[in-house]
Image (tube, rainbow over all chains, first blue to last red; front, side):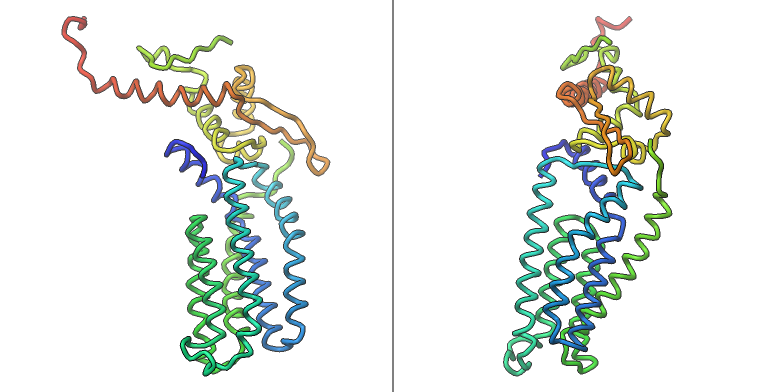
Length: 199
Length: 115
């Protein structure tokens, strides 16, 4: 991590969090979860294509977000240790999430009695994703990621409550909650940071 | 502009005045924890007006604590600032100086030196 004195480390952490308070990524992730969830429920045969489409759109979304942020909060490049740390965290999360998505289909095709040591395959995958969010939340100190993790954990129980068999429901519900959070964040962000002219 | 970086100032007069001004201190501290940032980012993070920022940045650039680069991003001009090595050292020494000064405040003055 950044080897700064305590008060400057706190300043760096505050600045870093401020550049992640826009809600764009939240909305993207939430919408992606809703799309994947709906596809899983309605037309599971095209799920791989839809998931690949979401994955491909990450890069353009990040480029757009960068322009969006710089037009409102200006440009900043954090230190190399911070960027390295960020790359490690996001790579780990992507690898774990990708792994879970690969696991999702074989697990989803199992019947609960096939893995009676767990409460159900649907929730297993959702709770693994929740664990990734928990890890990200603890590492980045972004409290809302911890909330998302809790939402996913709770949503993992939904299939039992409504007796649904699809893994899509928890994703759909959690995605909708994350979109709502993201929308509130982006609204606050746009009010606090109006688009600025050249200075 | 003359500057000196005493490690252990004997009096407040030896504190680096270029950094000691609150607005410049927060600009320097903000730049210390990032690699580089543009004018807009610094103005937002410090809460300074554009006019104030301009005046303080000019002093820091004159003092060679901050390097400035004028570039273009998306066909718009962008002014990017970063701390120089001298600026980075200066802020470390400033922390040391202020720490030492604060430490001496609690030390009783020997009676022989009292006026």
